[in-house]
Length: 485
Image 1 (cartoon, rainbow, N blue to C red):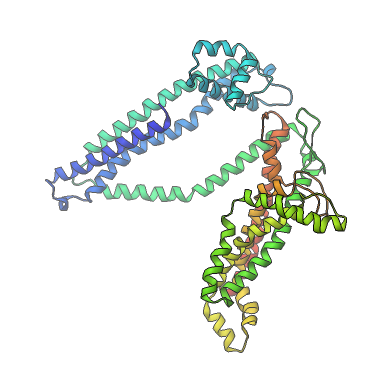
Image 2: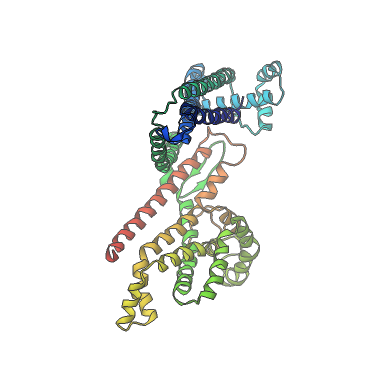
């Protein structure tokens, strides 16, 4: 039974519990709801909660704990001889899990256990069969690893069956017990409202837990990378030259430079145009012009980045090459920082413009009226009153645009190329951190190599840069906001 089907069954039992609880509450008072402590729907909801919550909590805990417990029990089957040089036990266990999942898929596709056993005796044939399913397995798979995968699969199947039995048993027990507890004196509303309060508290912590999960996963995998590749070479080398199989030079600075250079060019285009258009739409444009121009400007935000990438590749790149780069002797390639930055800047204009326009419109009209009362012109009012008052919000809009620029991939791939280099020439091809993260994790790669794990170190580096940008922007916002509160 799949998790989806089990979830539907539990929800069905919970819905039955709702109807049963409501009916029993009304039956206890012979249909006169005024004699109940709570509305009839609260009694049904309380039975629904006691039916669904224990089952779903058990399901959640089981899904989290089962892989950890199985991995701990299976890890003892791996000997030091099964761990290739330059890798760790956790990487080998990742291979064990992939093999177990792949063989389970082969059985689900119709392969018999006899055929599977014969296939597991042939590591090359097993790798080929799993490869057709999109499961990548290391070339150094040993018999112990295959046996560990077999044990992992057997334990996972047994655990899955136990999870189904436990979840259904708790759902049925919760339904029966909570339904028989329904009496006119039961404070069903208090029970339901307490659950809603806990639910709201849990929802408010989702962002924090998500952030912690992202950070811990990046730190954990980056630690694996730095165990295989020297940290000083990663942070201080000026060469990016990955070679699967060994002999790589994985210096991060050419990628960081490309990211910052492309983002800088994009912001030079987007920030002035976005802010000026926001000032015009909010302070000078008539209602008719604004109702037409603002939606048209925001259409740019709805265009997929791949379309911008094609525009950069087919139109902007050749134009910059033929009209500027080649006449000035600065390059002969249509893929360049200027190409990607210009197109990305066009894409970012609505991010800056729309948010800045909303912020400027939120400035109190009394500030404008006071400025006009002392003889200031509209342009002086905009420069000396409106923009300073709206500065914190405008900084936030620029920060959003900068984060979008740093994380963009498709435009850089198609507009800036894939060359990792340190150069001041904007008409040369360069690349960014995000592009290399994708390229290092694409294809038939093994997570046992530093050339693959470097993607997590790059992600952590990008996260630190973005965090620093957010802290700087928050400092600026707080400093200037105090003047207008």
